[in-house]
Length: 476
Image (tube, rainbow, N blue to C red):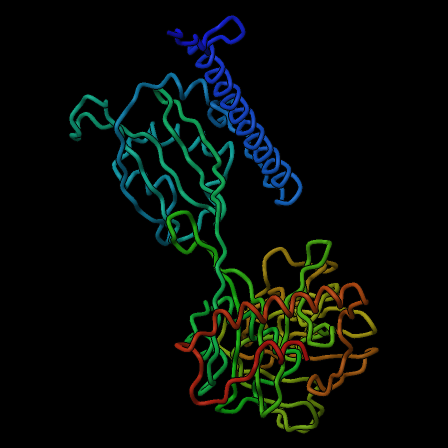
């Protein structure tokens, strides 16, 4: 019987299971390493792409430089203040009244005279307290130990502070026995814009005040239009007033000071007078019409606010002398003490009493012009013959000195020594813009128009007049 053949003869060997498994594991490891290298390469490529995009495509953003060190304080007082023991403090407020002084205010608060004198001596190294005006608010501080009780016996005078001007605070702080330091602190102010658009029912002054403008800013507004408009004869009920102006606020959101008139327009008898404020490279500013002509003229037509024209230029019967003669100027009736402004910039060539004119000022201007102001009650301080004055500067006050029946300003304009009617003046603008400045004005007009349209919401637009397109009006 034939025996079965062995299939595992010498020419054929059976597969080794352990070798196969090792090969499979090695292959899987290589695949994992390949996938890992691929993932790392992809992530690196993405990171590099993002970095290049941030460097090349995104705008540069300034990076603040941070420091762990505190902001440096006043070098003369930092060490002395750092050594002071911690104290609790509170304050009470008071303000100067008529005939008052800062020393009297401190005495009224119960501050010991010796301590008050020491504090005032420190203040005088930086500020003269005699320059403080009536109504000046002062905070008076008292302090006591941090672990003590706030009773009248534990408290002592710690100093005071006040705001002499909108952008500055003066602080007087106690540093020891009868020892005080004074510090000037800059007050940061933020500027905000306001827009008023109103109809005139009685006067420009009342309309502007009703629109929220301060009295001082309204006076500036009236001066701005006084070069082109005769407020005595030209104004009509229903005329329209538009003003963009600013105000400045402190860190506590309290009004610190009035700002500037940025744009003003007055529609009078259907004619619109529009003026824009433009800052110059030398730090000055002026107002210009849409064609770049300066609003300011060599002379103002009316050098006194709120006055009534009581006598015109020309032949008239004199109210006191009783005979007819040439009245060489205009008379403006106003209450005694009303401020009188220089009609133009120039040099004072006469100041003092002048016969029937009483107290008198004469100013020489450019182009052969002179202006004279008579019957004054008094002169502005520090004025003298030969002094330079600027247009709009207060030079005196309405009175009735000389030959006068009541308080009024007699105003004359002379051209080459000959009297001319102030109402007939047609003097050229103070300044005309060149091409570069005119381009700056166009840019300012565009920016101002955008700001006005942003502020002129439906709640404050006039309903009695059709609304114009402000941007188109300002760029025409």
